[in-house]
Length: 248
Image 1 (cartoon, rainbow, N blue to C red):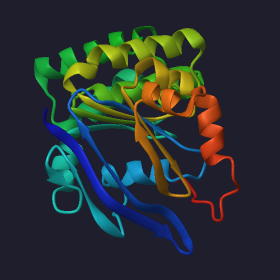
Image 2 (tube, one colour):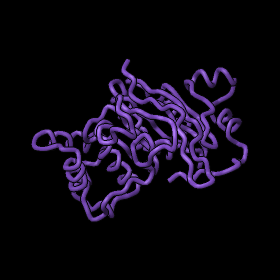
Image 3 (tube, helix red, strand yellow):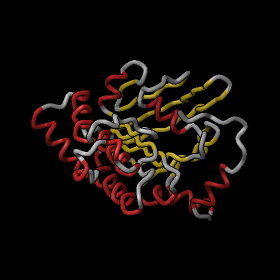
Image 4 (spheres, rainbow, N blue to C red):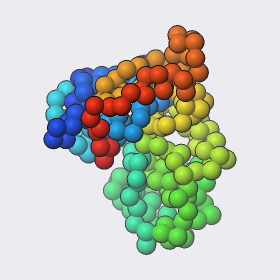
């Protein structure tokens, strides 16, 4: 299988705070990786390095073979990114916002129309496409954010808390969507929901205080520890961190 993401010894600090400390992992096509850790563990900072929003202090990372330092435009072309607090213009409608994203992505004509129709249906936002984003519920805003990450059909998805703010039925819909599209993509999902990792991820990583503690499958971790994933997560991360990395 094709190597889609490769991170090697990534480090990032903010003043005295070591947010990410020598994190290394790889992802191949078809991987759905649950990226887990307590608040301040370094998840969002790692994702921002992989999506070229902030450079690593040291270490290397490539996405679809493109280096995040040397070829950031190519990396962004191949990534769909949903940030933790995804920005959107509140006065825009979802239709207008997705057209704006298509402008940035270079999608025109029939390709643009097909892409917007596809994500509107798959993210279940067709009914609110012409309603100002500022009037939408948190759940709908999250789905609009997911739609913009998917609109250019990228081979790599990096999603920070994609089901945050969704009700149980909406969470299930998003999980089914990600499962359906996972075969030919590489999907990195930051989440606090262990049930979500169990449901859709074939691998999981746990980081704490910026350091990678676990890189395995949910089933193997459960079998190795002889406990459910909640208990294992608490066991590995319940200590008070020496320093807290701000996840910005």
